[in-house]
Amino acid sequence: MSVVTFNSFKLMPDWLLTAVRYLYTFLVYMLMPVILVRLWLRGRRNPAYRERLGERFGYLPDDVPQGCLWIHAVSVGESQATQPMVQWLMEAHPGMPVVMTTTTPTGGQRVTQLYGDRIRHLYFPYDSPAIMKRYFEALKPVAVIIMETEVWPNMLHYCRQNSVPVALANARLSEKSAQGYHKFSFITAAAFRCFDLVIAQAGADAQRLLDSGVRQEVMHVCGSIKFEVKVPQSVREQGELLRAALGADRPVWIAASTHENEEAVVLDAHRRVLERYPDALLIIVPRHPERFDTVAGLIESSGLSCVRRTGVHLPVTDVAVYLGDVMGELPIFYGAADVAFVGGSIAPIGGHNILEPAALGVVVVFGPHMQNFLEISRMMLEAGAALQTSEEQLAEVVLALLGDPVQREEIGQHGQEVVESNQGALECTRQAIEHLLEMRS
Image (tube, rainbow, N blue to C red; front, side):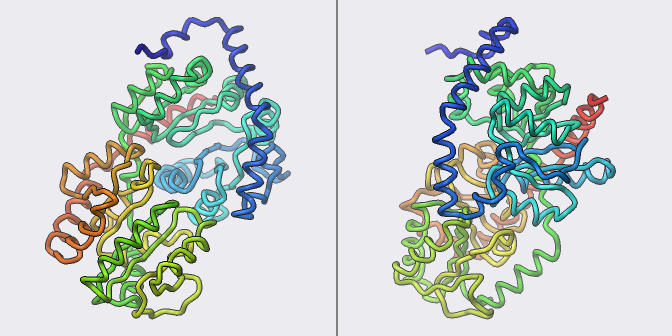
């Protein structure tokens, strides 16, 4: 079946493109009650969603910095990925204020942990013309950088209307997401045209983005800045201290960034691990903090002994499960483990960042659903730097790794080599963004 792509729309007259955006805006307003109900429901689970609601509607505090660089990172993973880029930007342009928006409170918490008061965090606004107009009038941004894959037609329209250069950085587009954009290409193709710079992670991402509407002349392929992982010595030391407090001689594995239905799989696997290694410890770190209590209840109902990071004084060497119910300490938890299963990969989420544990030399295991990290996971598997497994085989894979320290050492070393050999995307990204910033004049 043929797919309608950007080429079908590049000759559309301006009046028709405007009409298409009006249609999109009409749909946004029609869906607003659903959006608000969803926000209210999220607020019941996580009260942080109810905070600073005005920002989501374009009513910003009076002290927001104007003439800023606006960076949008939807949640935790994207916020984390900004670190090497933002560090360079603040060093190269010390007088330019930076505002970073996120959609989720967890993303906002990560921004605060990473940057403190050096940059201003705000919540991303809903994509209606009136709301976006208020946002642009308040911030008066000199440039906009959107991380990974976020396409908002009205936001991009106001970038174009206000002559604000806009980039899509560390861009990726999975086959599934590309198919979704193609279904609505009569709306999204015009939005993709608005980007002044697109920095793709890989050639396959670049091609899918071009097919979705990005202009050829603005496309760059730089690799993923997620490879620019710098593990501070302090993190390594804290990981070693935590491992000593949890039991240096016992087998320890971690299930990180887990989602609903994955914890049950992991706990079942851990019960099988305990049959061979009765003193083994599982560290569970759920992806979303609003699920900490739910996961604690699930562990309790499983009959496994458990302590929570926030409710215990170390050392603790006699429990089966350690619940990492805090934000920002995942690298430390990785550093305390022998094997790292990275979640979002058994549940059909698309996976999460597997480079963080790899950079620490920890063996990486993930499930079948890695479409959001397809190229990275492929590289890791081909290098013998990770293992992919199924829900049914998770316990066997973990048991085999826990019982073979030589294999763990070899796989962990390959992981570090993959990370180090693929660094360099930051320099390519830096050059492209410098050109973008020159466009503001």
